[in-house]
Amino acid sequence: MSDSAKLLFNGHEYDLPVIAGTEGETAIDIRKLRAQSQVITLDPGYGNTGSCRSAITFIDGEKGILRYRGYPIEQLAENSDFTEVSYLLIYGHLPNQTELKQFRYDLSHHTLVHEDMRHMFDGYPSSAHPMAILSSMITTLSAFYEDTAENMDLNIIRLLAKVKTIAAFAYKRLKGQPYVYPRNDLSYVGDLLQMLFSFPTERYEVSEVLERALNLVLILHADHEQNCSASTVRMVGSSAANVFASIGAGVCALWGPLHGGANQEVIEMLEQIRDSGENYQAWVNRAKDRDSGFRLMGFGHRVYRNFDPRARILKRAADEVLQELGINDPLLDIAKHLEEVALKDEYFIERQLYPNVDFYSGIIYRAMGLPTNMYTVMFALGRMPGWIAHWREQRHDPDTRINRPRQIYTGAGNRNFLPWYERTQG
Ligand code: ACO
Image (tube, rainbow, N blue to C red; front, side):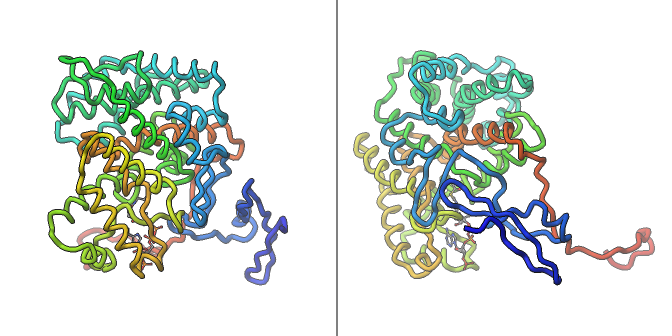
């Protein structure tokens, strides 16, 4: 492959370096283009723009491949747990026994939030969306833990350890139930379950089925390279903002219904379909009609053009979890039928739209007994190690500069100010 590309523009020829990744992905490096030619590139939505070099996650959207640090998602989902995957993503290698033991110890000994911070949860109305609480409480951690170079790795541990306490407290606030404190004798996921579902009045036994299912779901959400929220973390982090502020912003980006907020919308859509009595084709037709303002939530992806490997694993897992828990959820059947009808439809085939990670995850959260507005919080918990890995990688990357895209200005030309009494139009 050639190591440079040529751009012909306005009678000049510009040589642009070509950069290749480990898996043969190729980029034309345009960093110096504007300085040489006064021209910028335009790519709304960044669909064709590489914003960094990254060694964390590899995706081949055509082939449905997803790997964290080189390991296929299927192998990690089958053999690993969320804590180990978090270590892998953040530090770049699978931990040896000593490293893993220490990491588990650290994560279970930084779980408490400051009591002053706990009082803040009481200030939220119980109708508050838990994503609002999660994002602001993560940012609030920066008020308690100083951002210094020496603290960097400790703050990362604090964030990963405390975020599940924050998420569980947000849930308890929502339910009007007493906050349940973390327990160091449980696994990361086991502790999360007990903080969510136990009461001070009774002894809680962590369900093995739920622990396994939640580990799986969190692993599948743990990273997805330069998506909207990871890019937000990097955008904020590029100004040298601390890890709590950068990831608080990432949580906000995840909240939107086109991103992580889709899992809540999927279940609400399936409930609507159930209650409507209309057939699946009617809903698929509605999704095809631009003017309806309706999309099939949990369908489509910017990168995957064949299948989303996470959705395949989750579909199977949803079946197994429901069976193991002895739950018969009609929404799972509705989801499967809807998928079947959509995948046969020319509109979806042509546009290569398939179920994404959000399509089946909600079924599992529902089986756990979580309300729909907690689903995106669960996604955020899963994505935490990925965001941390991106923030950390960027901090160590010599190429990092403050992120500052350009624009093509399309507003009014130069004009003179008139006082209000002389204006005849706005
Ligand atoms: N239902 C109906 N039509 C769709 C859907 C959908 N779910 N998704 C895409 N399309 C159509 C678009 O209308 C567009 O059609 P057109 O070419 O006739 O204009 C075409 O498919 C391409 O869609 P874009 O929106 O341009 O694709 P983009 O890559 O920008 O968006 C996205 C990807 C946001 C995921 C989109 O597919 C979507 O809105 N899906 C539903 C929300 C969702 O599930 N989000 C979760 C994504 S996964 C994640 O973030 C974890």
